[in-house]
Image (cartoon, rainbow, N blue to C red):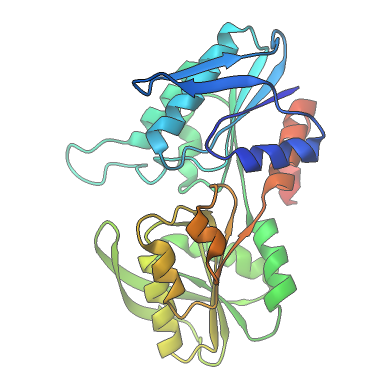
Length: 310
């Protein structure tokens, strides 16, 4: 087995490598003067089971091209099997036609990854479960829930806890977490006028004098979470925490979170945190390296990945 790391999230790749106790494969991934991506694998990979770790986060298109060209280089280097390990799958929010003459970009990216040479895909908390069906190769979708649940139990466990879904679309995710924690469930009904802008309309469930935990898969502009936190506090919640798998946190999101009523926003390191994230007083990162390393080991050994969540 060999592990190849792209440039999108080098610290996570190194942490996974340390968990498996296997050094990263030597490779040169660099740019020509016109910013074309060039990849050269500096070790023999013939007949090897190779895992390429690359989140397609900002800059999304650059990191996606790194992944595709790395897959092609490994395929032409006669690797026996190539697994694309994508902790954060970019373009996942474009998983259906949202209007006339619009693309389904998640399907396009799935096709590109398959055609570039991937034999299977390992990812984490896809925005929509049906994206697994966009791939014509085996796809394992891990869940960050075990990592998040452990942190919630360590810091917030108590009888007055209520898990809150920030929108109707996230109810299944929130219900699953509430079941694991034996906690109550609340739902925020919101109306989204356009992408990146949301308005909280109503709260379904009892949050008065309760500690609320908002749960979501992606936080981008953080507008939804911050509006939800304000609404929960106005309804009498004693505190609001948020647990989100993928911290995209674009634009002024970090400042928005800092000035919100949220005591803490907890994200994973599926996306490498910026300096603003690292120094923020109310944003914390949990590592998913042991979870990803365990799954990689199981895939290499041909053992069950789904048993990770039993």
